[in-house]
Image (cartoon, rainbow, N blue to C red):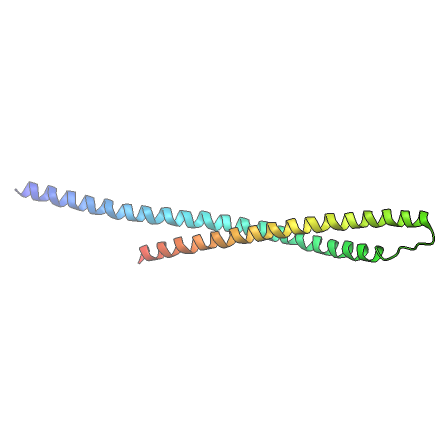
Length: 138
């Protein structure tokens, strides 16, 4: 009878220890997810800053190209046809350049929005998991 009681107590103690270990393993797995998401967040933030730097350069370039294209389009004269054709070709070239730069700028802006959306989503996931981990710790 004493042996049976001792065996039952030992089994109960072992089960309790394993149950506590299971909870701590679950908490550690969630903490691991939080750390991985934090690493992903930092990577996304670095990509965002790189793209933002490129966007700022493109913005300056686009402003210059647009200003040049706007000033060139008003300089036509009807007195000399051959020079007007040359001016028109130069204007077309400037307008195409401005269009190209503006297209790059729009693409960069779209990429920035996507990266910001990913950053927000990752941050939200981190906050949810962090909250769950804190609740389990208490």
